[in-house]
Length: 557
Image (cartoon, rainbow, N blue to C red; front, side):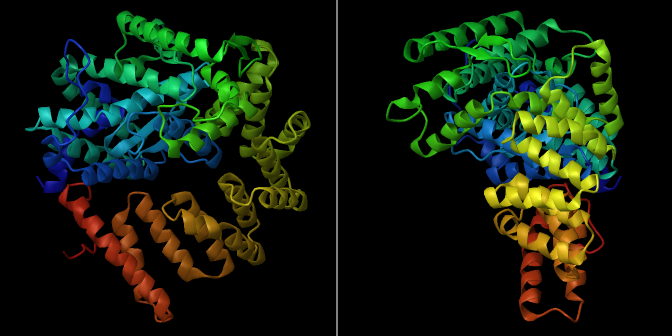
Protein backbone atom coordinates (compact mmCIF):
# COMPACT_ATOMS: atom_id res chain seq x y z
CA UNK A 1 0.00 0.00 0.00
CA UNK A 2 1.41 3.48 -0.86
CA UNK A 3 2.65 5.53 2.05
CA UNK A 4 -0.06 8.19 1.73
CA UNK A 5 -2.79 5.55 1.47
CA UNK A 6 -1.52 3.70 4.51
CA UNK A 7 -1.57 6.89 6.55
CA UNK A 8 -5.06 7.73 5.42
CA UNK A 9 -6.14 4.17 6.15
CA UNK A 10 -5.30 4.71 9.81
CA UNK A 11 -8.44 6.87 9.89
CA UNK A 12 -8.32 7.52 13.59
CA UNK A 13 -6.99 9.90 16.22
CA UNK A 14 -6.95 13.58 15.42
CA UNK A 15 -10.70 13.76 14.99
CA UNK A 16 -10.78 12.61 18.58
CA UNK A 17 -8.77 15.73 19.37
CA UNK A 18 -11.17 17.76 17.25
CA UNK A 19 -14.38 16.23 18.59
CA UNK A 20 -13.53 14.71 21.94
CA UNK A 21 -10.57 16.12 23.82
CA UNK A 22 -12.30 15.00 26.97
CA UNK A 23 -11.40 11.40 26.10
CA UNK A 24 -7.68 12.13 26.13
CA UNK A 25 -7.22 12.62 29.85
CA UNK A 26 -5.61 10.95 32.88
CA UNK A 27 -7.72 9.79 35.82
CA UNK A 28 -6.77 10.57 39.41
CA UNK A 29 -8.78 10.78 42.59
CA UNK A 30 -8.33 14.57 42.77
CA UNK A 31 -7.61 17.32 40.25
CA UNK A 32 -4.01 16.93 39.04
CA UNK A 33 -1.47 19.69 39.58
CA UNK A 34 -0.56 22.09 36.82
CA UNK A 35 1.40 20.26 34.12
CA UNK A 36 5.14 20.41 33.83
CA UNK A 37 5.59 22.64 30.80
CA UNK A 38 8.99 21.11 30.22
CA UNK A 39 7.76 17.52 30.07
CA UNK A 40 9.05 15.02 27.53
CA UNK A 41 5.81 15.35 25.56
CA UNK A 42 7.40 18.28 23.76
CA UNK A 43 10.03 15.92 22.43
CA UNK A 44 7.23 14.04 20.65
CA UNK A 45 5.28 17.04 19.40
CA UNK A 46 6.65 20.56 19.49
CA UNK A 47 4.57 23.73 19.87
CA UNK A 48 5.31 24.52 16.22
CA UNK A 49 3.96 21.12 15.17
CA UNK A 50 0.88 21.66 17.31
CA UNK A 51 0.14 24.91 15.46
CA UNK A 52 0.79 23.20 12.14
CA UNK A 53 -1.69 20.41 12.91
CA UNK A 54 -4.29 22.80 14.27
CA UNK A 55 -4.07 25.22 11.34
CA UNK A 56 -4.13 22.41 8.79
CA UNK A 57 -7.26 21.03 10.44
CA UNK A 58 -8.98 24.41 10.11
CA UNK A 59 -7.86 24.79 6.51
CA UNK A 60 -9.25 21.40 5.58
CA UNK A 61 -12.54 22.19 7.25
CA UNK A 62 -12.60 25.36 5.15
CA UNK A 63 -11.81 23.33 2.04
CA UNK A 64 -14.80 21.10 2.71
CA UNK A 65 -17.12 24.07 3.20
CA UNK A 66 -17.53 23.17 6.87
CA UNK A 67 -16.75 26.60 8.35
CA UNK A 68 -18.99 29.61 8.86
CA UNK A 69 -16.70 32.57 8.22
CA UNK A 70 -18.89 35.58 8.80
CA UNK A 71 -17.39 38.86 10.07
CA UNK A 72 -20.27 39.67 12.43
CA UNK A 73 -20.28 36.22 13.99
CA UNK A 74 -16.47 36.14 14.08
CA UNK A 75 -16.46 39.42 16.02
CA UNK A 76 -19.06 38.10 18.46
CA UNK A 77 -17.15 34.86 19.02
CA UNK A 78 -13.74 36.48 19.36
CA UNK A 79 -14.93 39.20 21.74
CA UNK A 80 -16.38 36.53 24.02
CA UNK A 81 -13.53 34.04 23.62
CA UNK A 82 -10.66 36.49 24.14
CA UNK A 83 -12.36 38.01 27.18
CA UNK A 84 -12.26 34.46 28.58
CA UNK A 85 -8.64 33.97 27.50
CA UNK A 86 -7.72 37.22 29.23
CA UNK A 87 -9.30 35.83 32.39
CA UNK A 88 -7.51 32.47 32.16
CA UNK A 89 -4.40 31.52 34.09
CA UNK A 90 -2.35 31.65 30.85
CA UNK A 91 -3.58 34.67 28.87
CA UNK A 92 -0.46 34.67 26.70
CA UNK A 93 -1.33 31.33 25.08
CA UNK A 94 -2.05 31.59 21.36
CA UNK A 95 -5.65 30.76 20.42
CA UNK A 96 -7.70 30.60 17.23
CA UNK A 97 -11.49 30.32 17.40
CA UNK A 98 -13.81 29.35 14.57
CA UNK A 99 -17.42 28.29 13.91
CA UNK A 100 -18.29 24.95 12.31
CA UNK A 101 -21.22 24.77 9.92
CA UNK A 102 -23.06 22.07 11.85
CA UNK A 103 -26.30 22.13 13.82
CA UNK A 104 -25.04 19.28 16.02
CA UNK A 105 -24.47 20.41 19.60
CA UNK A 106 -20.73 20.27 20.21
CA UNK A 107 -17.47 22.15 20.65
CA UNK A 108 -13.89 20.94 20.55
CA UNK A 109 -10.29 21.90 21.23
CA UNK A 110 -7.53 20.55 19.04
CA UNK A 111 -3.78 21.03 18.95
CA UNK A 112 -2.16 24.45 18.88
CA UNK A 113 -4.95 26.33 20.65
CA UNK A 114 -7.49 25.85 17.83
CA UNK A 115 -11.00 25.75 19.28
CA UNK A 116 -14.11 25.10 17.22
CA UNK A 117 -17.72 25.86 18.14
CA UNK A 118 -20.55 24.14 16.29
CA UNK A 119 -23.36 26.49 15.27
CA UNK A 120 -25.79 24.09 16.92
CA UNK A 121 -24.29 24.58 20.36
CA UNK A 122 -24.94 28.32 20.36
CA UNK A 123 -28.43 27.70 18.98
CA UNK A 124 -29.13 25.28 21.86
CA UNK A 125 -27.92 27.67 24.57
CA UNK A 126 -30.59 29.61 26.43
CA UNK A 127 -28.32 32.59 27.11
CA UNK A 128 -24.86 33.69 26.00
CA UNK A 129 -23.15 32.79 29.25
CA UNK A 130 -23.80 29.10 28.50
CA UNK A 131 -21.79 29.37 25.27
CA UNK A 132 -19.06 31.17 27.20
CA UNK A 133 -19.08 28.32 29.73
CA UNK A 134 -18.41 25.71 27.06
CA UNK A 135 -15.66 27.85 25.54
CA UNK A 136 -14.10 28.35 28.99
CA UNK A 137 -14.09 24.58 29.44
CA UNK A 138 -12.34 24.05 26.09
CA UNK A 139 -9.87 26.87 26.75
CA UNK A 140 -8.99 25.17 30.04
CA UNK A 141 -8.27 21.91 28.22
CA UNK A 142 -5.78 23.88 26.10
CA UNK A 143 -4.14 25.94 28.85
CA UNK A 144 -3.64 22.76 30.89
CA UNK A 145 -2.23 20.99 27.82
CA UNK A 146 -4.43 17.96 28.38
CA UNK A 147 -3.97 16.78 24.80
CA UNK A 148 -0.18 17.01 24.88
CA UNK A 149 -0.07 15.41 28.31
CA UNK A 150 -1.94 12.44 26.90
CA UNK A 151 0.57 12.23 24.04
CA UNK A 152 3.26 11.68 26.65
CA UNK A 153 1.27 8.86 28.25
CA UNK A 154 0.64 7.13 24.93
CA UNK A 155 4.03 7.53 23.27
CA UNK A 156 3.76 4.38 21.19
CA UNK A 157 0.63 5.25 19.27
CA UNK A 158 -0.60 8.79 19.99
CA UNK A 159 1.27 10.62 17.23
CA UNK A 160 0.50 8.05 14.48
CA UNK A 161 -3.14 8.11 15.51
CA UNK A 162 -3.29 11.91 15.37
CA UNK A 163 -1.61 12.05 11.97
CA UNK A 164 -3.76 9.27 10.60
CA UNK A 165 -6.96 10.92 11.70
CA UNK A 166 -5.96 14.29 10.29
CA UNK A 167 -5.17 12.52 7.00
CA UNK A 168 -8.68 11.04 7.04
CA UNK A 169 -10.23 14.43 7.75
CA UNK A 170 -8.18 15.90 4.91
CA UNK A 171 -9.30 13.14 2.53
CA UNK A 172 -12.96 13.69 3.37
CA UNK A 173 -12.81 17.46 3.22
CA UNK A 174 -10.78 17.37 0.02
CA UNK A 175 -13.53 15.27 -1.58
CA UNK A 176 -16.09 17.83 -0.42
CA UNK A 177 -17.84 15.20 1.68
CA UNK A 178 -19.10 16.14 5.12
CA UNK A 179 -20.16 12.51 5.59
CA UNK A 180 -16.59 11.34 5.06
CA UNK A 181 -15.33 13.78 7.66
CA UNK A 182 -17.98 12.63 10.11
CA UNK A 183 -17.00 9.01 9.41
CA UNK A 184 -13.39 9.87 10.21
CA UNK A 185 -14.49 11.46 13.47
CA UNK A 186 -16.56 8.41 14.40
CA UNK A 187 -13.75 5.97 13.62
CA UNK A 188 -11.32 7.91 15.78
CA UNK A 189 -13.75 7.97 18.66
CA UNK A 190 -14.40 4.26 18.36
CA UNK A 191 -10.73 3.36 18.44
CA UNK A 192 -9.72 5.63 21.29
CA UNK A 193 -12.79 5.46 23.52
CA UNK A 194 -11.93 2.21 25.25
CA UNK A 195 -8.27 3.17 25.68
CA UNK A 196 -9.03 6.52 27.24
CA UNK A 197 -12.34 6.06 29.07
CA UNK A 198 -10.53 5.69 32.38
CA UNK A 199 -8.65 8.92 31.80
CA UNK A 200 -11.63 11.20 31.44
CA UNK A 201 -12.85 12.25 34.84
CA UNK A 202 -9.88 14.10 36.31
CA UNK A 203 -9.22 16.38 33.37
CA UNK A 204 -12.91 17.09 32.83
CA UNK A 205 -13.20 18.19 36.44
CA UNK A 206 -10.05 20.27 36.13
CA UNK A 207 -11.44 21.96 33.00
CA UNK A 208 -14.73 22.57 34.83
CA UNK A 209 -13.00 24.07 37.86
CA UNK A 210 -10.77 26.40 35.88
CA UNK A 211 -13.53 27.21 33.43
CA UNK A 212 -15.90 28.36 36.17
CA UNK A 213 -13.20 30.61 37.62
CA UNK A 214 -12.58 31.97 34.13
CA UNK A 215 -16.29 32.70 33.63
CA UNK A 216 -16.47 34.70 36.83
CA UNK A 217 -13.31 36.67 36.09
CA UNK A 218 -14.53 37.50 32.58
CA UNK A 219 -17.85 38.81 33.83
CA UNK A 220 -20.12 35.85 33.00
CA UNK A 221 -22.52 33.98 35.25
CA UNK A 222 -20.42 31.22 36.89
CA UNK A 223 -23.50 28.98 37.13
CA UNK A 224 -23.86 28.91 33.34
CA UNK A 225 -21.69 25.79 33.03
CA UNK A 226 -23.87 23.82 35.42
CA UNK A 227 -26.99 25.15 33.68
CA UNK A 228 -25.85 23.96 30.26
CA UNK A 229 -24.45 20.62 31.42
CA UNK A 230 -27.56 19.97 33.48
CA UNK A 231 -29.86 20.54 30.54
CA UNK A 232 -27.62 18.35 28.37
CA UNK A 233 -27.80 15.55 30.94
CA UNK A 234 -31.59 15.76 31.19
CA UNK A 235 -32.07 15.70 27.41
CA UNK A 236 -31.80 12.28 25.79
CA UNK A 237 -33.98 12.57 22.67
CA UNK A 238 -32.38 12.38 19.15
CA UNK A 239 -32.78 16.13 18.69
CA UNK A 240 -31.01 17.07 21.90
CA UNK A 241 -27.43 16.71 23.17
CA UNK A 242 -26.20 13.18 22.27
CA UNK A 243 -23.02 14.30 20.48
CA UNK A 244 -22.11 16.68 23.29
CA UNK A 245 -22.64 14.00 25.92
CA UNK A 246 -20.57 11.49 23.97
CA UNK A 247 -17.60 13.83 23.73
CA UNK A 248 -18.08 15.51 27.14
CA UNK A 249 -19.31 12.84 29.60
CA UNK A 250 -21.62 14.42 32.18
CA UNK A 251 -22.76 12.95 35.51
CA UNK A 252 -25.05 14.24 38.22
CA UNK A 253 -22.06 14.45 40.56
CA UNK A 254 -20.15 16.57 38.07
CA UNK A 255 -23.13 18.89 37.61
CA UNK A 256 -23.63 19.22 41.37
CA UNK A 257 -19.95 19.99 41.94
CA UNK A 258 -19.96 22.59 39.17
CA UNK A 259 -23.05 24.28 40.57
CA UNK A 260 -21.72 24.27 44.12
CA UNK A 261 -18.42 25.79 43.01
CA UNK A 262 -20.22 28.40 40.92
CA UNK A 263 -22.51 29.39 43.77
CA UNK A 264 -19.57 29.90 46.09
CA UNK A 265 -17.99 32.24 43.54
CA UNK A 266 -21.28 33.98 42.89
CA UNK A 267 -21.83 34.56 46.59
CA UNK A 268 -18.43 36.21 46.89
CA UNK A 269 -19.28 38.40 43.90
CA UNK A 270 -22.61 39.51 45.36
CA UNK A 271 -20.92 40.71 48.52
CA UNK A 272 -18.85 43.14 46.43
CA UNK A 273 -21.19 44.04 43.54
CA UNK A 274 -24.67 43.43 44.86
CA UNK A 275 -27.34 41.47 43.00
CA UNK A 276 -29.49 42.87 40.24
CA UNK A 277 -32.21 41.60 37.94
CA UNK A 278 -31.50 41.24 34.22
CA UNK A 279 -33.57 40.78 31.09
CA UNK A 280 -33.71 37.56 29.05
CA UNK A 281 -31.88 38.25 25.80
CA UNK A 282 -34.48 36.35 23.74
CA UNK A 283 -37.96 37.17 24.99
CA UNK A 284 -37.63 40.01 27.51
CA UNK A 285 -38.47 37.98 30.62
CA UNK A 286 -36.60 38.52 33.92
CA UNK A 287 -33.55 36.40 34.72
CA UNK A 288 -31.03 36.35 37.53
CA UNK A 289 -28.39 38.89 36.58
CA UNK A 290 -25.25 37.47 34.97
CA UNK A 291 -22.06 38.80 36.48
CA UNK A 292 -21.25 40.81 33.36
CA UNK A 293 -23.79 43.50 34.22
CA UNK A 294 -22.92 43.53 37.91
CA UNK A 295 -19.21 43.81 37.15
CA UNK A 296 -19.81 46.58 34.65
CA UNK A 297 -21.85 48.53 37.20
CA UNK A 298 -19.03 48.09 39.72
CA UNK A 299 -16.49 49.58 37.34
CA UNK A 300 -17.09 53.08 38.68
CA UNK A 301 -14.21 52.64 41.09
CA UNK A 302 -10.64 53.17 39.96
CA UNK A 303 -8.27 50.28 39.38
CA UNK A 304 -8.48 47.06 37.37
CA UNK A 305 -11.83 45.58 36.43
CA UNK A 306 -10.62 42.29 37.86
CA UNK A 307 -7.46 42.10 40.00
CA UNK A 308 -6.42 38.66 38.69
CA UNK A 309 -6.37 39.68 35.02
CA UNK A 310 -3.12 41.11 33.58
CA UNK A 311 -3.12 44.86 32.99
CA UNK A 312 -2.65 44.55 29.23
CA UNK A 313 -5.76 42.34 29.02
CA UNK A 314 -8.01 44.69 31.02
CA UNK A 315 -9.08 46.77 27.96
CA UNK A 316 -10.28 43.64 26.10
CA UNK A 317 -12.43 42.60 29.06
CA UNK A 318 -13.73 46.14 29.47
CA UNK A 319 -14.71 46.29 25.78
CA UNK A 320 -16.46 42.93 25.98
CA UNK A 321 -18.47 43.99 29.02
CA UNK A 322 -19.36 47.28 27.36
CA UNK A 323 -20.59 45.51 24.21
CA UNK A 324 -22.81 43.20 26.25
CA UNK A 325 -24.24 46.10 28.23
CA UNK A 326 -25.01 48.11 25.07
CA UNK A 327 -26.62 45.20 23.23
CA UNK A 328 -28.14 42.84 25.81
CA UNK A 329 -30.40 41.34 23.12
CA UNK A 330 -27.53 40.54 20.73
CA UNK A 331 -27.30 36.84 21.54
CA UNK A 332 -30.80 36.28 20.16
CA UNK A 333 -29.66 37.78 16.86
CA UNK A 334 -26.52 35.61 16.96
CA UNK A 335 -28.63 32.47 17.28
CA UNK A 336 -30.86 33.40 14.35
CA UNK A 337 -27.93 34.34 12.11
CA UNK A 338 -26.25 31.04 12.94
CA UNK A 339 -29.46 29.18 12.15
CA UNK A 340 -29.80 30.79 8.72
CA UNK A 341 -26.13 30.36 7.78
CA UNK A 342 -26.00 26.73 8.94
CA UNK A 343 -29.28 25.66 7.30
CA UNK A 344 -28.99 23.42 4.25
CA UNK A 345 -30.80 25.98 2.09
CA UNK A 346 -32.33 29.44 2.63
CA UNK A 347 -35.75 27.96 1.84
CA UNK A 348 -35.37 25.53 4.74
CA UNK A 349 -34.85 28.49 7.07
CA UNK A 350 -37.79 30.34 5.49
CA UNK A 351 -40.08 27.37 6.16
CA UNK A 352 -38.99 27.35 9.80
CA UNK A 353 -39.88 31.02 10.28
CA UNK A 354 -43.14 30.71 8.37
CA UNK A 355 -44.25 27.90 10.67
CA UNK A 356 -43.58 30.12 13.67
CA UNK A 357 -45.38 33.08 12.12
CA UNK A 358 -48.38 30.95 11.19
CA UNK A 359 -49.16 30.23 14.81
CA UNK A 360 -47.29 27.10 15.84
CA UNK A 361 -45.55 29.38 18.32
CA UNK A 362 -46.04 32.99 19.30
CA UNK A 363 -45.39 35.87 16.94
CA UNK A 364 -41.80 36.39 15.81
CA UNK A 365 -39.45 38.10 18.25
CA UNK A 366 -37.28 40.89 16.77
CA UNK A 367 -34.35 38.48 16.50
CA UNK A 368 -36.52 36.00 14.60
CA UNK A 369 -37.72 38.72 12.24
CA UNK A 370 -34.08 39.49 11.58
CA UNK A 371 -33.37 35.83 10.83
CA UNK A 372 -36.43 35.57 8.59
CA UNK A 373 -35.29 38.64 6.63
CA UNK A 374 -31.80 37.17 6.20
CA UNK A 375 -33.25 33.93 4.86
CA UNK A 376 -35.51 35.81 2.44
CA UNK A 377 -32.58 37.87 1.16
CA UNK A 378 -30.45 34.78 0.59
CA UNK A 379 -33.35 33.11 -1.25
CA UNK A 380 -33.44 36.02 -3.74
CA UNK A 381 -36.55 37.46 -2.13
CA UNK A 382 -34.95 40.68 -0.93
CA UNK A 383 -38.05 42.74 -1.72
CA UNK A 384 -39.98 40.64 0.82
CA UNK A 385 -37.21 41.15 3.40
CA UNK A 386 -37.15 44.95 3.16
CA UNK A 387 -40.35 45.66 5.17
CA UNK A 388 -39.10 43.49 8.05
CA UNK A 389 -35.67 45.14 8.10
CA UNK A 390 -37.05 48.66 7.82
CA UNK A 391 -39.35 48.01 10.77
CA UNK A 392 -36.39 46.72 12.78
CA UNK A 393 -34.37 49.79 11.75
CA UNK A 394 -37.07 52.06 13.18
CA UNK A 395 -36.94 50.14 16.46
CA UNK A 396 -33.11 50.01 16.56
CA UNK A 397 -31.78 52.83 14.35
CA UNK A 398 -28.16 52.42 15.48
CA UNK A 399 -27.94 48.63 15.22
CA UNK A 400 -25.07 47.65 12.90
CA UNK A 401 -26.26 44.10 12.25
CA UNK A 402 -29.62 45.28 10.97
CA UNK A 403 -28.07 48.16 9.00
CA UNK A 404 -25.83 45.75 7.08
CA UNK A 405 -28.72 43.37 6.44
CA UNK A 406 -30.82 46.28 5.18
CA UNK A 407 -28.07 47.48 2.84
CA UNK A 408 -27.65 43.97 1.41
CA UNK A 409 -31.40 43.60 0.88
CA UNK A 410 -31.57 46.99 -0.83
CA UNK A 411 -28.74 46.03 -3.16
CA UNK A 412 -30.34 42.70 -4.10
CA UNK A 413 -33.72 44.34 -4.55
CA UNK A 414 -32.24 46.71 -7.13
CA UNK A 415 -32.03 49.82 -4.93
CA UNK A 416 -28.37 50.19 -5.80
CA UNK A 417 -27.84 53.89 -5.14
CA UNK A 418 -29.61 53.64 -1.79
CA UNK A 419 -27.58 50.58 -0.76
CA UNK A 420 -24.24 52.11 -1.77
CA UNK A 421 -25.04 55.33 0.07
CA UNK A 422 -25.79 53.28 3.18
CA UNK A 423 -22.50 51.38 2.88
CA UNK A 424 -20.54 54.61 2.34
CA UNK A 425 -22.15 56.15 5.41
CA UNK A 426 -21.35 53.13 7.57
CA UNK A 427 -17.76 53.04 6.24
CA UNK A 428 -17.27 56.72 6.99
CA UNK A 429 -18.59 56.29 10.53
CA UNK A 430 -16.49 53.15 11.25
CA UNK A 431 -13.66 53.02 8.69
CA UNK A 432 -11.78 50.14 10.36
CA UNK A 433 -14.76 47.88 11.01
CA UNK A 434 -14.14 44.52 9.33
CA UNK A 435 -17.80 43.57 8.88
CA UNK A 436 -18.67 46.91 7.26
CA UNK A 437 -15.62 46.83 5.00
CA UNK A 438 -16.21 43.29 3.74
CA UNK A 439 -19.93 43.90 3.20
CA UNK A 440 -19.16 47.11 1.32
CA UNK A 441 -16.62 45.35 -0.91
CA UNK A 442 -19.04 42.48 -1.58
CA UNK A 443 -21.63 45.03 -2.71
CA UNK A 444 -19.17 46.76 -5.03
CA UNK A 445 -18.04 43.46 -6.52
CA UNK A 446 -21.68 42.42 -6.95
CA UNK A 447 -22.12 45.27 -9.45
CA UNK A 448 -19.65 43.62 -11.89
CA UNK A 449 -18.38 47.06 -12.91
CA UNK A 450 -14.67 47.97 -13.36
CA UNK A 451 -15.02 51.36 -11.68
CA UNK A 452 -16.86 49.83 -8.72
CA UNK A 453 -14.18 47.14 -8.55
CA UNK A 454 -11.42 49.74 -8.35
CA UNK A 455 -13.32 51.41 -5.52
CA UNK A 456 -13.57 47.99 -3.85
CA UNK A 457 -9.78 47.58 -4.03
CA UNK A 458 -9.34 50.93 -2.30
CA UNK A 459 -11.81 49.98 0.44
CA UNK A 460 -10.35 46.53 1.13
CA UNK A 461 -6.67 47.45 0.95
CA UNK A 462 -6.30 48.38 4.67
CA UNK A 463 -7.78 45.02 5.70
CA UNK A 464 -5.53 43.16 3.30
CA UNK A 465 -2.46 44.90 4.71
CA UNK A 466 -3.49 43.96 8.27
CA UNK A 467 -4.95 40.48 7.71
CA UNK A 468 -3.47 38.82 4.65
CA UNK A 469 -3.88 35.45 6.37
CA UNK A 470 -7.65 35.65 5.92
CA UNK A 471 -9.23 33.57 3.16
CA UNK A 472 -12.35 35.75 2.95
CA UNK A 473 -10.36 38.94 2.46
CA UNK A 474 -8.11 37.31 -0.15
CA UNK A 475 -11.11 35.91 -2.05
CA UNK A 476 -12.81 39.30 -2.24
CA UNK A 477 -9.57 40.99 -3.23
CA UNK A 478 -9.08 38.45 -6.04
CA UNK A 479 -12.58 39.03 -7.42
CA UNK A 480 -12.21 42.80 -7.26
CA UNK A 481 -8.78 42.68 -8.92
CA UNK A 482 -10.14 40.53 -11.76
CA UNK A 483 -12.97 42.98 -12.43
CA UNK A 484 -10.55 45.91 -12.27
CA UNK A 485 -8.30 44.24 -14.87
CA UNK A 486 -5.36 43.48 -12.55
CA UNK A 487 -5.04 39.77 -13.29
CA UNK A 488 -1.56 39.50 -11.74
CA UNK A 489 -2.70 40.61 -8.29
CA UNK A 490 -5.83 38.50 -8.74
CA UNK A 491 -3.65 35.42 -9.40
CA UNK A 492 -1.58 36.11 -6.30
CA UNK A 493 -4.74 36.39 -4.19
CA UNK A 494 -6.20 33.20 -5.67
CA UNK A 495 -2.97 31.40 -4.75
CA UNK A 496 -3.33 32.62 -1.17
CA UNK A 497 -6.93 31.40 -1.07
CA UNK A 498 -5.74 27.96 -2.22
CA UNK A 499 -3.09 27.90 0.51
CA UNK A 500 -5.56 28.95 3.21
CA UNK A 501 -8.03 26.31 2.01
CA UNK A 502 -5.70 23.35 2.44
CA UNK A 503 -4.49 23.21 -1.18
CA UNK A 504 -0.84 24.03 -0.67
CA UNK A 505 0.39 22.44 -3.92
CA UNK A 506 -2.23 24.33 -5.92
CA UNK A 507 -0.95 27.55 -4.36
CA UNK A 508 2.65 26.69 -5.24
CA UNK A 509 1.66 25.84 -8.83
CA UNK A 510 -0.20 29.12 -9.23
CA UNK A 511 2.78 31.13 -8.01
CA UNK A 512 5.14 29.21 -10.30
CA UNK A 513 2.90 29.86 -13.29
CA UNK A 514 3.04 33.55 -12.48
CA UNK A 515 6.84 33.45 -12.80
CA UNK A 516 6.42 32.16 -16.37
CA UNK A 517 4.80 35.43 -17.40
CA UNK A 518 6.94 37.93 -19.26
CA UNK A 519 5.02 41.00 -18.07
CA UNK A 520 6.07 40.90 -14.40
CA UNK A 521 8.00 43.90 -13.18
CA UNK A 522 10.98 43.51 -10.90
CA UNK A 523 9.06 44.16 -7.67
CA UNK A 524 6.28 41.71 -8.50
CA UNK A 525 8.73 38.99 -9.52
CA UNK A 526 10.68 39.47 -6.29
CA UNK A 527 7.44 39.30 -4.27
CA UNK A 528 6.38 36.04 -5.97
CA UNK A 529 9.85 34.52 -5.51
CA UNK A 530 9.74 35.40 -1.82
CA UNK A 531 6.32 33.83 -1.40
CA UNK A 532 7.44 30.61 -3.07
CA UNK A 533 10.43 30.52 -0.72
CA UNK A 534 8.03 30.87 2.24
CA UNK A 535 5.55 28.24 1.06
CA UNK A 536 8.04 25.52 0.09
CA UNK A 537 9.29 24.64 3.62
CA UNK A 538 5.68 24.58 4.82
CA UNK A 539 4.76 22.02 2.14
CA UNK A 540 7.84 19.92 2.87
CA UNK A 541 6.87 19.79 6.55
CA UNK A 542 3.32 18.78 5.65
CA UNK A 543 4.72 15.99 3.50
CA UNK A 544 7.08 14.88 6.24
CA UNK A 545 4.19 14.63 8.67
CA UNK A 546 2.03 12.78 6.15
CA UNK A 547 -0.47 15.64 5.89
CA UNK A 548 0.10 16.41 2.20
CA UNK A 549 0.21 13.44 -0.21
CA UNK A 550 2.38 15.11 -2.83
CA UNK A 551 1.73 17.10 -5.93
CA UNK A 552 2.57 17.61 -9.54
CA UNK A 553 5.52 19.80 -8.71
CA UNK A 554 6.94 18.44 -5.50
CA UNK A 555 9.15 21.11 -3.94
CA UNK A 556 12.81 20.36 -3.59
CA UNK A 557 14.36 20.34 -0.16
